[in-house]
Length: 146
Length: 146
DNA sequence: CCTTTATAGTTACATATGTAACCAATTGCA
DNA sequence: TGCAATTGGTTACATATGTAACTATAAAGG
Image (cartoon, chains in turn orange, green, purple, red):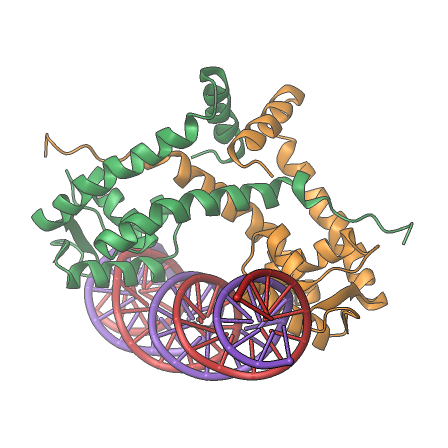
């Protein structure tokens, strides 16, 4: 036993990040899950569509800018289109691509969930000082550059 | 549209954490997945058993100290016991509880994976200065107290 | 042009994960 | 005691997720 060196999970970065990230995501997800029947993937897709509403983006773009895989996105979209929260047109010039947009109903949901998410984030960040918050942003930029 | 305020995912903490955490965990998992056929859950269970080898802990304790749910732990243990990496005895005084330990084979795997995980962590943290590393530790302590 | 190769997206299958119900042993307490 | 409530753990079912194969369209190159 003396020659084994067990990992101290409680100081191990990947482990701690995963715990933290899960706790936070789950907490938020539980809310929009319950109130709007959205999965996390669906909500993320909606958030992206909201941001790029001006030009109406394709599924591929949603996938690449959320780092979700295209199958996950496809499924989320299928469900969002079925529930009429997202509209899907065919791209004029390229019939493979779709052109995705939040519908009025989609915006309605978005406008409820977004503030809810922001509030949650604020509550979490309340544990940190202003300096720590800045530092965290910087650290994240270095560890996971966008 | 003007009255909607889309979430800026790239500055949204829960989102960034989840991306970062996934990237890191996946990277490490891919390795022990491929080489040893371990899922992340299984590896975590092994890591915990390694740490508490002196007294031999129960499944419940594994679950509570990894924040995984008991079903996940139960399944991981079933697989680890089947592959002879973990031994399971019945607790003397309480026949519901099990007493879990890494086997010799289990330790062998552990001693390969643990350094691998540590190396990965080091590589990630290499992007940060010493001060940033300290800060990160402190921030994690505040956000997800153990 | 016509064939090859790449891309957008979906489908099908296998695997993983979460939830609830369950069994067995234990504890609490009337 | 003895019976209800709790706890450790597993099973069964539904749902989610990942991987590979597939369809349709488009781009590239002879």
